[in-house]
Image: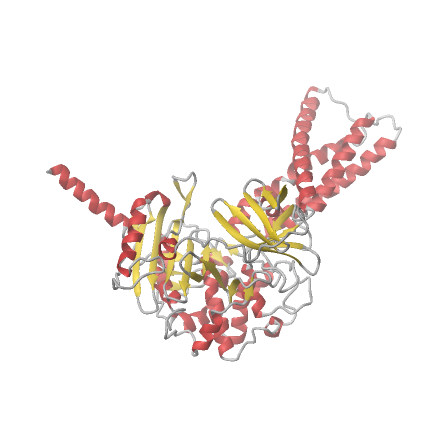
Length: 619
């Protein structure tokens, strides 16, 4: 009897931990695209949570249609170590889903006739606002919505670790302006900076701060009382306090979740990713896109326009972007939406315009299984419509880098780490470093397969002649400097290791007085020392860069200073070694030492110039 009572008590405790939020069931005779009745939605989500406790620490989700909230639930712990369970008051960071507030704001101003989506955005900005453009072509709001203005990520940090370091949006944009890599309209390169710029344009046109505009025109009409948008959440004191309870977790080995602390970071480019609030409020925002009485726009035509395609996959009829929303084909529905991620949270917002059914999902650690429960897995690709003969087999071979990187300065390291090398295997198929396979199905179409997932892509060249492989939201550019960069980097690392042992050997020799000095020995030793240190600062900055989404100015100047000093030392040593090689001076070293020094310093100089860890234009 006691054992049965204990088992029953344990069951109740487990249920309380798994399901901490509110549950709402709707009518049984209505169905989701996957075939679940509304009444089965909650059971399906709760069963997944119960069957997969190791796949999350905390998540909240809500399912809706155009008329009602079908289900809402929270699972796990906002702070597992302090036993703070997820509930309806748990707040999460939206990440890039925040960008949808930008695009809604833009469409509201468009509806009022205050903005032209196809006008050059410089019309709405202070004179001389852009300082890092490569092209004189107009940049339109439509370019910003489609993420094809030519920008990617930048060198400088868009996040800070203290609320004291938060600056006005306009200043933050000027401080972090990335280089323009591509001609506007030619390459989709996802840009946080471009989205934040659109938010700043909302400020300029409306005459109020972006945060105030969003509260007045989005949060208040939707009664989103538990949502903040400023970097420090100071626009909603309740959210600001609740955010302190949230802890971030990362899965380190597939089964163990590591506590990363609060990961409270302040996003200076806040329109791009700083919205924070409850799942109920996020559901209100998402549902507004499918409601018959959408309170965000005065005219139904404006909402319909926003949900219409604005970019396609190459010259196909496959829609990619819808005024800032992304499209996704699932087995049972075509979804529009946006996903997001911050240092602490991940989120997803999607809806089916045909049925009006959608869902929102937020987590501090875990994967979104709810979308598949409602809409099925990603749809398989019917390539027969696009397949034809390939006139140049093997032409795609080469090294590609993601277009989202800035492709210069410190980010060049990321370009190397995230490259897509394609080697031809015959029969129009390529291997991508064993991680994926690429099959060219026509002169301008390909299919990339990774695991069980396959994606259709388009092949083209920019007006500058750069070869691009695009999957729509993600693109890769052929870069002939990647391979020599990798070779030089490997050689330089080897030389750095050799240089370390040479310095160690010399120190031992000096201490034992068994080493003889020679002409240029001091410079050679100094160059060996800099070979060890030139590579260290950039590699050390990988962690901070990821945490801050860029480098601070102090970090940037430090890296540049070390590399500039190294370049000077390498050049001076090269000259000294050449002089030593041709000199017949009595204290000259054996010729082979000078030859080795010349070769080593030539490689070192070439490596720094080619890799451009942080060039002066980025400073």
